[in-house]
Image (cartoon, rainbow over all chains, first blue to last red):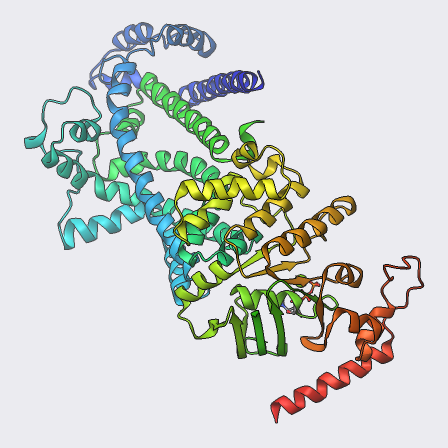
Length: 336
Length: 288
Ligand SMILES: Nc1ncnc2c1ncn2[C@@H]1O[C@H](COP(=O)(O)OP(=O)(O)OP(=O)(O)O)[C@@H](O)[C@H]1O
Ligand SMILES: [Mg+2]
């Protein structure tokens, strides 16, 4: 009963949020200067040509009118036509989403594994040089934003020791007949190890660049809460039972210390996805973010609108997932 | 048979002053030894030194701790941990914080039997149920599946007592096991600890502020002041004729169990001064 109410309430707030985002984006991209129609036509186009196309895309109407028309379409799953590519926005956006999701999830995995390991090591060897090293590494990682890490990685592993691909998502020779756009997922299911290796080779640098700041945040926060947990009575009691320090950390402290980190990782994961916009551009990775920049350059209003709404939806879903995971992991909330 | 023998134990703050000064005490099988002294005297640190859980800022600088005849200081760390885990157990002060909030009760009792002592899972399970029954917990099967937050403080302390006895340790250290509970529950828990200790023939080191409690459950006691044992006596002798001035003052400051309304006297400053002087002299001797 209460759970149902919570979920319903959550759905309603989500819808209101999305509507708010839609209104803001809709208005902002229409009041900034730059005529999308003029940009898509060759330089010699006449006033009449422009006017004709403006009518076709509905730009001759007032902004509120345009919004109502757009919203009506959205209700039926129609996000309009992209001006620059003349394809349905929904098709375009959904074809790119898998690439961005795969990149973000791989980056998240790298961040969790690297940050988690650092936090565990820092806790196990707290008050020693090892903890100092963890702190310094995390501090350095955080003092540089993700896209600059991308440049550093390109210089290191693209130029100095060219071991990874610096652009694209897959080598053309290995572009097997994918049925979905989840290339990595599909390659894993089909056990095509050559394709997996190639995809990872492309994804590695952008994913690491995205992961570095998040890994540092996880390392700092998780280490902090692990160290606090290590002083609690039940951890001390476990020590008297004969467990070694490593075991005490992983099996007594970690399950409790991880909760505050989890909430933060949820929020930070949405920032990470936001980071894909620039990182995908930097590595010419064919994802949603890269398409967003093209859309802005081309003033492709319907496409921008669609991408932003999709990002907003993605962020709300992630937050919802984190909240649910929090309840699952915390027995004190499970029956509430 | 001495289950715990501490000989001239010195504990210091790393790069700082002494916390325990040549502490010696002896707890034999089936006996309850009280450890009293005011706050900050070092009672808990004695227990922690024995159990290997001293705060990182402290270190043992001298003396020996013999657990069931073995000098644990001579064992390599991993083996020492296991030996302590198999020979000794702790009944903690605050049952609300001493159980892991994210784990069910069952595993919190049985895991160490399986992990450290190599029991079969089913045996550990059966043992836990038996113990929960022994500490008078109704419906042990349900409690085994519960999380700590679903149980009252008294219940949780019973569980911790059961858990302490699970591996049949030779020695149990109870560090103010009732101070965090409300008064009505305190008595029951005290009785339960005494009852369990007798039935299992365990040696019990009982840390408390409360001489009234000591007089009820202990066979002997040590009085600790500023990290030093100022008196070590059988119960009867202590209450009949305490030797040390601080002990006498402590007794005078405690309502007797025969006369709970008896007049209370704070420990006089003159006595404190005398003890301080004695300890200062001790330190001078130790440095010489
Ligand atoms: N983590 C620590 N770091 C440094 N000194 C400590 C630490 N823990 C305790 N001490 C010092 O050790 C001394 C003894 O403390 P201990 O906890 O053993 O006292 P206690 O007799 O158990 O007191 P209480 O009755 O309040 O529990 C105190 O003077 C305290 O300041
Ligand atoms: Mg204490």
